[in-house]
Amino acid sequence: MNIQRPLLFFVLFFVTAFSTLNAAVAADYYGGSTDFIRSSCNTTLYPDICFTSLSRYANAVQQNPGQLARVAISVTLSKVHRVASYVSNLTREADYSADTRAASAIHDCFTNLDDAVDQIRGSLKQIRQIGAVGAGAGSFLFQMSNVQTWMSAALTDEETCTDGFQDVDDCKVKTQVCDRVSNVKKFTSNALALVNSYANKGMP
Image 1 (cartoon, rainbow, N blue to C red):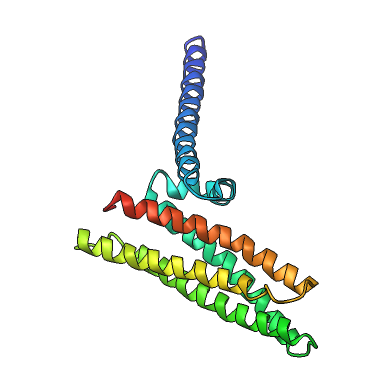
Image 2 (cartoon, one colour):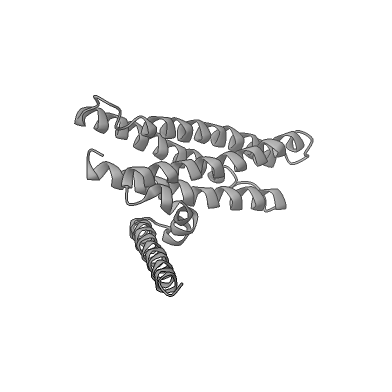
């Protein structure tokens, strides 16, 4: 009995020490991933939005610039798709509006956002293929060029949407649409910046 008690204390001490060490290692590991995301986001135009939206994916991103770019595109796709759905619903109401100029701007905006969704979806599909077995530096540059082109086109589509409301009189719908689209433009801009950064780093 006297022998078992010191042994029990030793086991408890060992388990506690091991658990503490694991927690410290995990904190350091994920802390490093979070720091990587923060430093990467500091290169974007909207670093706070970037970090807030991407830091929750630190476990998946780790310290991989390619994975960070992929996650940023995925988050952006979700945001833009949601706004496109919102504007799509407005087009049905706009058909019965007396304000033909606003109705036209809403329809054009939906077309632009729908195109942006397609561009971002294509970018996500392309960037997921990067690093495939047998792909060389030339393939990486070609694929990244596609991603950069499509993300840039998506940002242009979003800007075209808000530009279309310049001649529309101030109203609730104009404010709601422009505010939402202006917000997703920030996500698209950030994603494009992270894509450009990844492209500049070269092969994964």
